[in-house]
Amino acid sequence: MTDILALGEALVDLKLINNQISMHAGGSVLNFSYYAEQAGTKVKFIGTIGNDFLADHIESELRYLNSNIKPLRIGQNTTLVLIKEAGKDFIIYRGADRFLTYDTIERNWKKADIVHTSAFALSLKPASEAILKALKKAKEEGVLISIDPNYRKEIWKKWNAKKENLLQALAMADYVKPSFEDAKELFGVKTPEEALKAFKNAGAKNIILSMGERGVIALTEDNEVIKVPAKKTNIVELTGAGDSLFGTVMANIAKGYSLNEAIQEGINVATQVIKNPKNLVRITQNFKQK
Amino acid sequence: MTDILALGEALVDLKLINNQISMHAGGSVLNFSYYAEQAGTKVKFIGTIGNDFLADHIESELRYLNSNIKPLRIGQNTTLVLIKEAGKDFIIYRGADRFLTYDTIERNWKKADIVHTSAFALSLKPASEAILKALKKAKEEGVLISIDPNYRKEIWKKWNAKKENLLQALAMADYVKPSFEDAKELFGVKTPEEALKAFKNAGAKNIILSMGERGVIALTEDNEVIKVPAKKTNIVELTGAGDSLFGTVMANIAKGYSLNEAIQEGINVATQVIKNPKNLVRITQNFKQK
Image (tube, rainbow over all chains, first blue to last red; front, side, top):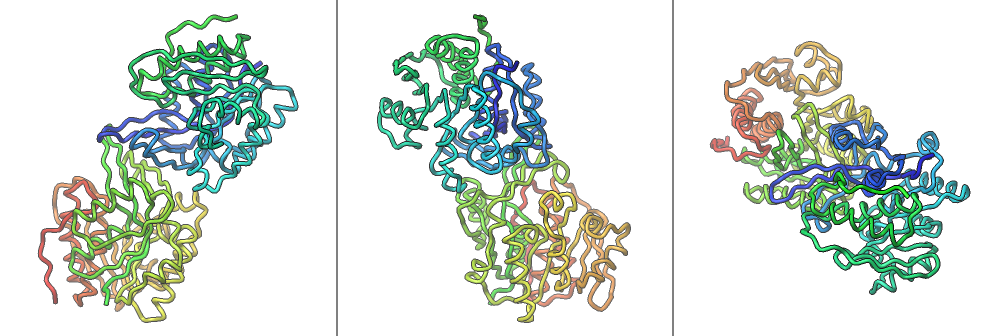
């Protein structure tokens, strides 16, 4: 049995900052999967990359990290994010990731405790429709669903993407981890409390709201509020931190820990990740099996 | 009166070679236009770039070079070519360039002596259809047509692009400048003589076949054969050399020089271009007006 089945994007972040170049395997769902694996769970990642030197780079990073994750190669360009200023000035070239089909998902499907995906993965056809169909199947089979609602209004508008797909997924979600920015973009909320409420209204059962140095505030299925402060550290690069938090949280949920314990662990990991310029960082901490 | 009206691609070549990065304004039609302008003709370039930092880079290079060329900005990513090994290992991310419409061409149309485009520009809809329509209009108006048949079989296949569009354009062409590689890819020929014949059979009137250090062999409308040797020089980077040759040739044709004289001048310019890692190089030579 696979603990977590992750459907969505693997891509390359190409950073062109101060005339320095760096290339990193990334994509929210790939990052999430890697950190869930680091936390000691069995993860099956289903997502598509190209057949080019960027795909080689993704594979070689994963190999170097001894990961078992293996994105599927198809005859399209690997999806690329060109970054001039992280989170502010970037260009997304959608490629292979959006051509994930339901047929491919079905062929690679594993029975799992949790099925995970992201808003990015739900934004463009055919991948969006394939993943939505897969989530419905998972729901029918009683599998837990987790969604990273990494939604950006302007990008979805440019892509002519249907927000409806994401809302359908959120209504099925057992766990969501929006950043406060995601919540503002998606629901136009102004406070963390409004953000938690908006996701609850959208149908999500457990909401884990990440707020950077302000830590995490979560709202459980039973309307319990959990607050966990962030740890002070030197920040080198934030990309991938939220994914590492969420991947670790869901791995710990799969292992049977409480949401509170899972979030503590997630924050421990994210604190290590932000000290490193890469998205995928080897986690030195020893995770305990419950 | 504009001497040359150029329809087609402007893009960024992003080179990732030996962990060094360099960014260059490029695209066959942009390069051609710039060198035709350097040769002292009036050029109107009609092509689309995005509204992003790559588009800023293209504009700033052109501004730095005191060029009057101004690609049009639209709400799509700037087309990007990611190069690991020049001519061998690269990934093309098509963006804004392919969204050139006939409406945009018509609004920016100038009466000209020569209308120019490339195979790249003729590969994907809607740009391909818009440009083909514009070429037909030019032909009806008795304007000379020049085409850069920079065709690559594998890429066109991947894009599902119709070779038919290029063949229609070649049948209208007064001047074409294939490289020997282009000729092999397009017609499967084995010798320069077969290449010239194949383009003639396709309907092109004057064929200028560029063969790198083996120089140029051309076949005129009157079946005259012209051979011009290359000049020995240190090669730094070949990208843009063929475009600089062709842009200079057509500028000289527009100025009334013979094809033989025009090719001599084109080789002089290309010899300067290959000494420089950039696609767009300021030409120091003084061109004479006939």
